[in-house]
Length: 272
Image (cartoon, rainbow, N blue to C red):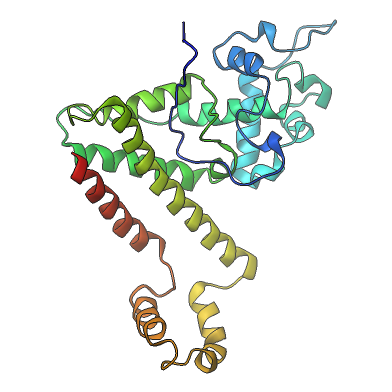
């Protein structure tokens, strides 16, 4: 039985500043959510008279995952999920109490489906590189995760706990204290989170403007040439131009990833 203490599985990403608490993990009724996450739906759903239910909680969650992957977090409504599984909107509430609990189930399901690479025989730097790359792949494939999962209140289901346990094991035999292991994992996943959000923002900018970065800079070049005086902004003009020419944009995802991950692991090397 868990004591009154904090179990802090690192779920990669902190929540965005979103006034709608229903779009965050941990905003539902805890006992109902935990019962669903650990396979005891008997205390979580509203009982109704009539024939037995035609679909399962897993099917409801899978339908929500498909919607989020295809259309983003904004597409997740109880009505839309109901249409996907072929039941009425009110019927969905017999499977999950509401949207907050559904989001918890979605996040935990995505974590539960991650592949866990065995760590035996790998040096610590290789292990942590795999942790970072696996999480980058997860957030790149399912970008809605960066919007919904709250670092301080993750859904404490089997998927979250298995992910946390596996990633903590990447620090075995490093000599760090338990507290430092948790802090080091948070530090590593914080870099992944920040990078993936920047990548999502860059992708949205391209989609929203229907222009590549190269086209956008080319279109604005005449204005920039007038505004950016090399004598007033000597470093900005010189270094910005050099970086832009080297990577074809003001920011390039793969280049930023390689540089940032190397620096992040280098910072951890000072501890290890």
